[in-house]
Image (cartoon, rainbow, N blue to C red):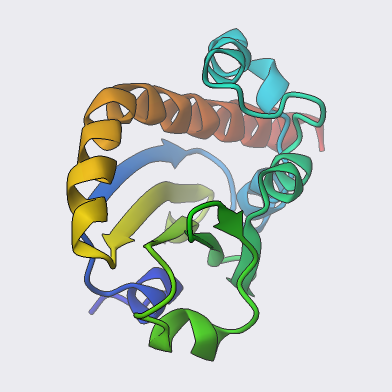
Length: 178
C-alpha cells in the first residue's frame, strides 16, 4: 500500500500535471539531503531555459530559486517528501496557510503544487520522483493556462529530468565521497 503524500493532501484533483522519476544508488537520507538544496546551475540546459523564460538565475540553488520565484514551502517530511506551491491571482503569491490553500476556490485563479518524493526501494537504492499539479480554479484559466502549458510542458519536463539527474549524480558522488 502506497503512503499518502502531501501532494495528494493539498491538490488531489487537478487540471494539468507532470511526473518524472529516477532511481538512485544511494541511501534515502543521503538522497534527500542532496535534493534539499541542489545546484541547478550544474545543468547548462536549465540555465538556458530559465533565461529564455525570464526566470530568475541569480541564485541557482533550489532554495534560492524557490524564494526568488515566490513559491511557498508547504510541508516537508524528511527524508520522504518536500512540497512547494503557489497560487496566482494574477501573479504568483505566497500561501498563508494550508487551510487557505485547500479552501480557497474563489480568489485564486491557478493553484500549483510541486514535490520531490523519496521512496526507499531497498538498502542503498532510492526512487526519487518529482510531480507538478496545476488546478485551474477560474474556468477561463483552463483555456489560457492550457495554451501556455502546451507550449512550456516539454521544456518543463526537460528541466525536471535535468533536476533529477543532478540529484542522482550528486547523491551517488556523495555516497562514494561522503
